[in-house]
Length: 381
Image (tube, rainbow, N blue to C red; front, side, top):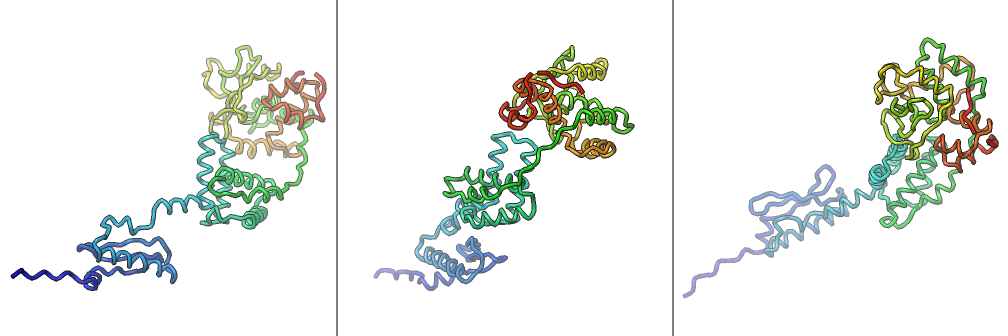
């Protein structure tokens, strides 16, 4: 007589011991069950709703059947939402996409501080408007709505700058997104033409220089302003100047660095150049140079010996001097525009001026065509 065969657990008894329950945890659905004496929790990856509960219950039933049939995946990987897909969804939100684009651009182009500020401002506006909206759901209508949102908060020209960056982002991700709704929207943003800033007159330049030299608070900047007007250098290039960059006979100066917000980098164009100095600027530098000076020292430091800050200079010194002289305000950058305009009007060769000031010749011809004469020397103020 054979021994009796042990009774096999019925399906209903096994399911009763390992019943998988669907529950809500902070508004998100999860599954809870016990298997092999261990309690398990599995996130469904969906918010709590009637439809999503049906999906969750299907997953719960699958787990129950796998346990009953001996096919239960003890690693739980079979029952969890795919992480790769979740990461993909997160990366393709509007804000996530632009954040990745900014990281790539920053690494590839070594963006200057001003450019980084534009990227950051664009990111903040995208965050505020689109929140978690998927990038592939952005159509021409929502792109146009974002453009209108920008117009209510920034000037037209700035809105166009921000939209240009977003369009570039979509171009960069074109293979993933398949369409770019920003091109047509960008075409409809047309900033009003800006009147060109008038250069300072010769009399205004002389008055500004005299005011800086005699002011009890701001005479520290007199030589710096003289250098700006006398060379046409960009503000950051003059701030970056070190004594080792100046020829021993003060005839020339090497320009290959620039400072913006305290960060020293290459010039705006990424190219260096050598400027021929006028006798006035050469004499000023010769008189200014300390005995036994450190070649690495700044030629034009701040009153406290640090790198000059453009905001501080403009707010505390430049604006107050112009206000006192009752001269129509122009930014400190206008010293460059003034130097170039007067030099060209004085007969300088445009190509020679472009080489000295670091301009693209075509840009120089475009912006200064009205004052170009025929021949070539920096003007003396």
